[in-house]
Image (tube, rainbow, N blue to C red; front, side, top):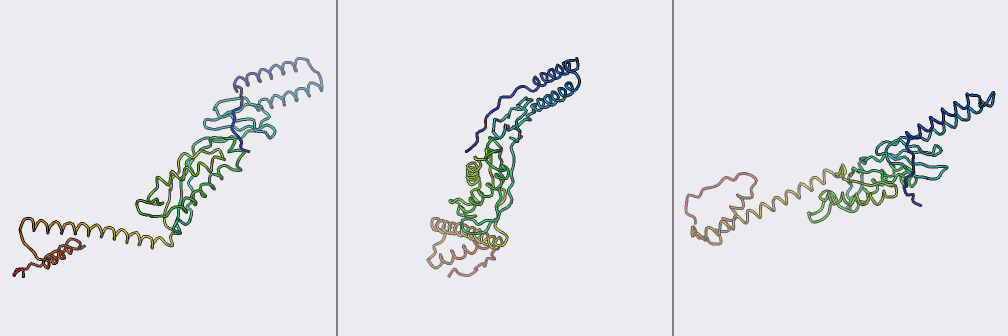
Length: 287
């Protein structure tokens, strides 16, 4: 059965302190002015002093962004989360819980992505307690609960997506914002039982595991080289086509198929070469 936070009625602490001080002064005046004599006076003094001390135990100070959870004889009676000085039933047990925003930086986990590649992944979670009753009674240790559920959500996220993928597909490396939102939603559902609200979730570390990092780096470099070469070739072909069209359109020179092929070959070598080419000037006849 889930516990729901409820507000407890509390009296002003300053006013109750004045009342208790006045009560103590009245009892002291009554005792030491001949109301009792002998052993009866001593017993009455001890009992009334103990009772006054117990009543003074009802004074409690609630700091900003903290909540005081109260139980009476094993039963939850309410929570006081408004900061100030209050007087509460002195027989209640009290537990103070911080409502401040907290950061949790998970440890780097070694998991497998969707393709089975071992990767290292970590996350930063921004969270806070919004229901003090659930955080106290529905889970054993809510801070440890946040830690374990974060690790579980990270493993689940990593197993659903590959480390790298084409631009039109979701991947751990290329879709950081989308996956951060998915991680936040997943954690919000998991941590509701602990009365915890997730404000933000972000991947703080993402890398291939050391045993395959070098091989994956070579694969990424090869893919980048292939993509660059493809772009260079496409641009060179377009430039050669433009050059031939302009030569024919302006009637500068008329080339047969064999000479066109030779010119295309020479231009492609010049345009796609990584180093500067050394031209050979033909001083004789074209044929």
